[in-house]
Image 1: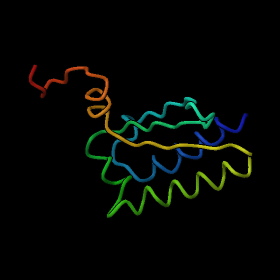
Image 2 (image 1 turned 45 degrees about the horizontal axis):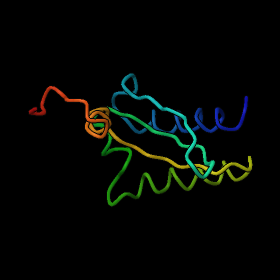
Image 3 (image 1 turned 90 degrees about the vertical axis):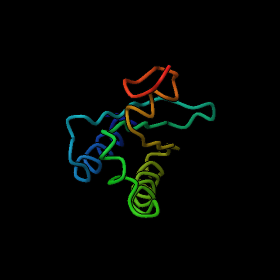
Image 4 (image 1 turned 180 degrees about the vertical axis):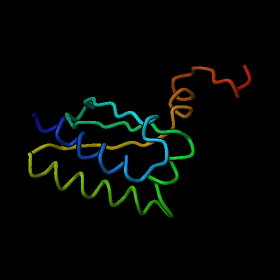
Length: 100
């Protein structure tokens, strides 16, 4: 298993244990312009607050763990967390609640 996939498995395990709807979670892997591996975690809207935590403390701890694991593999990473609804809004895709 290569480093980005191993890190994705680790991230998946951590996130799944923080949320109420793990069946709705998805993690996409990409690469940004700096060559860093980018992980985009899409969750049910109710679960985003569990992963971010109070004042962002939980996501900060997850990022710290992921960065430490990535450094051991010689990989730079970036982590973004959001709901599927937020992802649709960024892409300009209308959601059932949005008004056109």
